[in-house]
Amino acid sequence: MHLPFNQELKKGSAELLILSILESRPRHGYEISRQIEERSQGVLKFNVATFYPLLYRMEQRGLVQGRWVEKPNQRRRRYYRLTRAGRAVLKQQRGAWKEFAAAMNQITEPENA
Image (cartoon, rainbow, N blue to C red; front, side, top):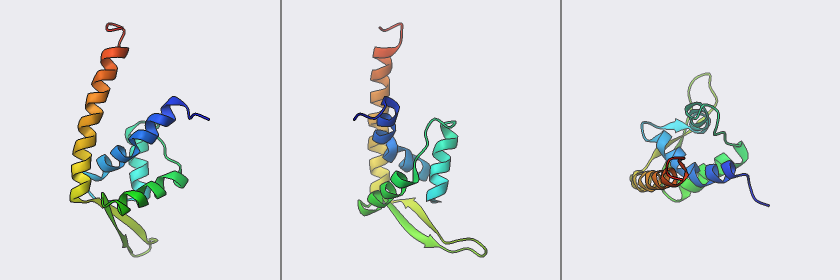
């Protein structure tokens, strides 16, 4: 069974989205997910069941580093930050995405079709 086209796009770009959100500063998982949803004006939303395992895999690969933070009157949260390897992957993926988007626009825009 194939996922709808937009689900496939989200699946393929999830890592790039997370790395991009973490570029400016460390954030906890829920905040990362919320930022993606807000910045995409609700177009991109992540299911908790897939989002946190992805963060865990990215941490295992050394792209992000997580640490538990406890603040008074708040529950304990895991904050993630980009590692040096994560910044390198972000740069590479961002460049590949820009190339891909430009190529897609060349093909799909009405004046080019």
